[in-house]
Length: 123
Image (tube, rainbow, N blue to C red; front, side):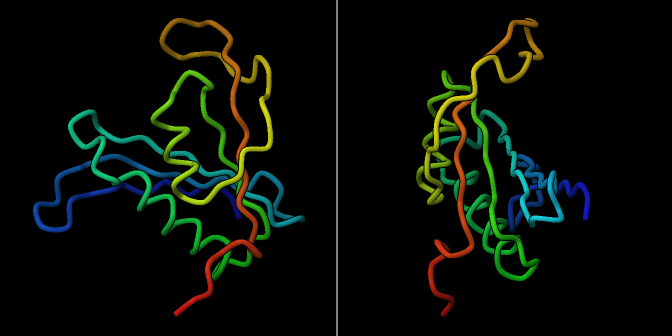
């Protein structure tokens, strides 16, 4: 288990809408982290939420993960809404978690998680 990066494309046109990644940062304990982005013109249409839900079900279901973590800049309201809509629970804030790639400043991140036991029952 390592790193997985998937492109998110429009089903009919094949246009790139964004990407989603999973990183197994603690495979021994079956803990992974999910990340995502969408193009500006694809935002607000549920693309990220649907992608995160599908990938979470795969990681926690078929791949046997127990815990999936998601971090979002505390000022990124849209990303936090994706986490909440995808069923993740906010656990707290990690202060000065990462360096912002755009301007080099340190940013706080909200930490979310989704557990295998919290997945909706499969149909």
